[in-house]
Amino acid sequence: KPVETGCSLKNGKLFPWDAVALLKASGADETIDAINPYRLRHPLAPAVAAEIEGVTISRKKIISAYKKLSKKYDITIVEGAGGIMAPVYKRHLFLDLIKDLNLPIIIVARPGLGTINHTLLTIEAAKSKGLDVAGVIINCAVKSRNGLAENTNPAVIEQLAGVPILGIVQYSAGSGSQINNVFKRIA
Image (cartoon, rainbow, N blue to C red; front, side, top):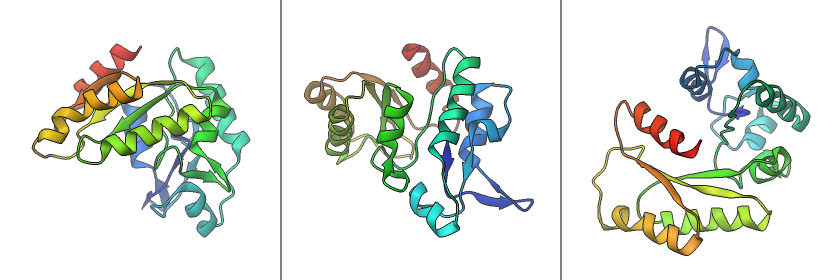
């Protein structure tokens, strides 16, 4: 998680809740600074939060952190923030960062109405930059009933985009095992 926004203060320091959860889930023996070089308080696109907070985000620092981790581990997953069109710094988008790191992408999409449009636009933007879209994971992050849209969206996305649905993670207060199963299929 190169940049996390919306961090809260804990013991006088910005605490990256997502990055801490990712570090714990990974089982890696790393410091939080190794996996999360930038923490920002405002819950905004990283470039916007950084500008407000007077922080300069360095592309080189992010790439260096990634290279160190990718040399140590067989699989290194980089989580974005706010979607691939969100600016990381200045006019540099997560889309550009993915290209800089030469990574395939896995799009995590919500299940409901509107997800076909959002997901297809994300896939199209990625492909327009020459990125390899490995697939889509449908993440039911909030508790809701599956309706017709939730039941038909995955097949429609797969058919129209030509990109596989790698898994559907159903809502669960403890969905860690479901996520692990999806990532076992990917690896």
